[in-house]
Length: 223
Image (cartoon, rainbow, N blue to C red; front, side):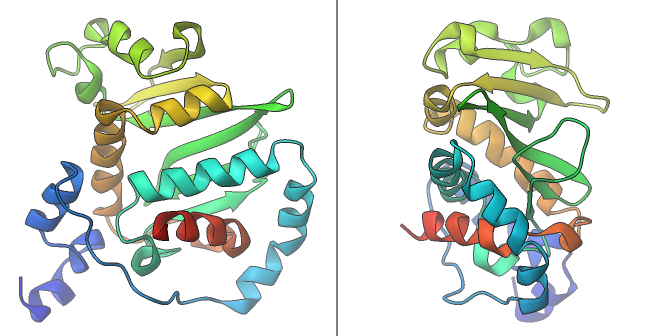
């Protein structure tokens, strides 16, 4: 893809052509990211108090480590695309009371919640990546596969958000969240969904992006 084509493309295609995206999806290649981040100091300070409040939570250390793992495994070129094509919100003011939420375009990708002193997570993925026959039939969800992706089968549940080819996966406990983020099938499914929404255009949640939380994500992706 030429430079002019990159500029004319929408979403993630401005940075990675289809072949590069496919190679990343399959785990064959990790494309080079920017060395530096573009940052708004005003935006950083806007959510600094929320970040300090998050750090006082008993789950904070584990949460930030998991976010680093998620960014490394599931977000391509996170520095190049930060805020404009993905974002992370810190203690967002929504009724489900999450600790953090990662978004792209208009879509939730990944959310972490408190579960006592532990954590629980919600992933949104393509249903067809987790059915026995590759269809969008909810009756064909491969539950044994999902159970193999976590530390204990009781730690995973699924639900069906509104929207075509969408599956919600709830994972309980930091240990099972980490296991899910190291399972090859689960990671490929997460990557596929993230590519879909990062390619749809600019992120609608830029105004709620927390640079302080993202520090831990982009550093996790660097390591």
